[in-house]
Amino acid sequence: MSSQHSLPDEQPSDHLGPIPDDQPAGQLANQDSAPPSSPPPASPPVADSGRMLHPVESRLGICFRDPALLDRAFIHRSFLNELLDDNAELVDNERLEFLGDTVLGYLVSERLYHLFPLQQEGDLTNLRSALVRRETLARMALELDLGSYLKLGHGEEESGGRTRPATLCAVFEALIGAVYLDLGTDTTKDVIFGL
Image (cartoon, rainbow, N blue to C red; front, top):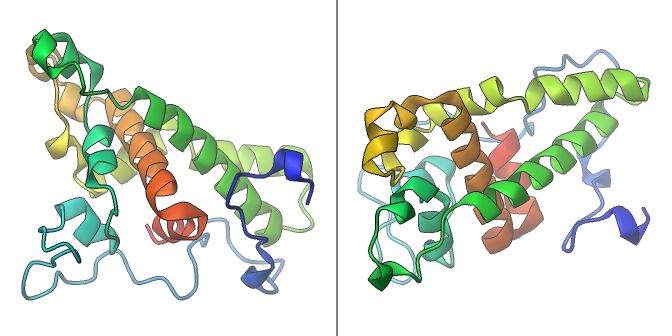
C-alpha cells in the first residue's frame, strides 16, 4: 500500500483472512468481537491510574491513556460560547469530529474492500455511504448514550441538541477521533466493528 494514502500508525489488514463472497454487508464486525450487549462488570472498572473509567470506556472495553481527549469529545461549541474567559483552555469537539469522520470513512472503506473483493468501486461507495451516514452514526451514538455526556450550552440544550441527529453524529465522530489519537488504529477498528 502506498504511504501517501495511509494513516500514521496503519497496519496492513491482511489479518482479516479470507472473506466469503456471500458475506452479508451487515456483518462488518470482527468475528472475535464481544457482543455489544454483554453485561456490565460486577464492580466499576478502574483505570491503571486508579481513576474510575468513564461509562463510555466501560461500554467499549477501552481505557484512555489521556482522559482529557475523551472529555473533549463531549464538549459542544455552544458550551464554550457561554463560558467566561477563565475557561479559555477548553476546546470543543469539532477538530476531533473532523478527524473521526476521516478515520471512520477510511476504516470502513478498508473493511469493505476486503469483505467484498468482487464489488466495483461504485457499489463499495454506496455501501460505505449507507454505513457512515448521519442517521446510522446518530443511532450508534444513541445506543452508546453519548447524548447524555454532551456538554451543551443552554440554548442548544433547550432546543433538543442532546437528541438531534446531527449533534449525535458529530459526537460519535469526535469519539472515534479521540479513540484513534489516544489508542491507535487497531483499537479504533475494534471499537467501530465491535458495535
